[in-house]
Length: 180
Image 1 (tube, rainbow, N blue to C red):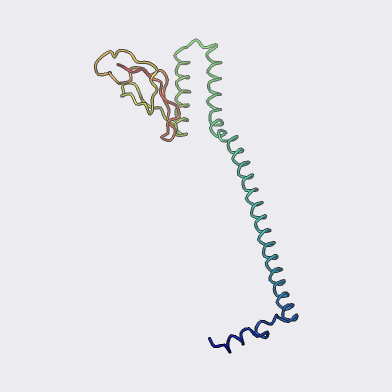
Image 2 (cartoon, rainbow, N blue to C red):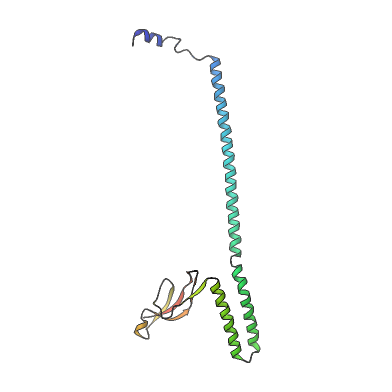
């Protein structure tokens, strides 16, 4: 760099401050940008608050609907059980004055079959267990006894309480006695 260039770069004209007019124009531009940014922030904040309010309303509505669903979930099943309860009531009244035990027995058998068909229509089925190998996934062993014969070792000898499945899922384990 030559000495002439150094002198020209250090001249007062090269480092002259901006004039007041230029400074005011740039300050005005900066204020406009700042106002624009503040407006965008206000709009985004408003959108955020509205979205949050919508989500909160959705959450509350979902909780309310879930609580209502749980309170009425068994209504359909219970309504379908009412005719069977009526049949039992009529059977009990008939049993108080009945002299023919065979007819009473047949009536109770009809009510039982009606109940079984209702359970089946709702997807509930019994799980057979007597004579089957013990399965801890579907059965609960209450006790074990000496097997009456060698074929029943490790198998279910007696069923104390039936097990039930609903749509393939165990809803009550069978309580069984296992041969050892």
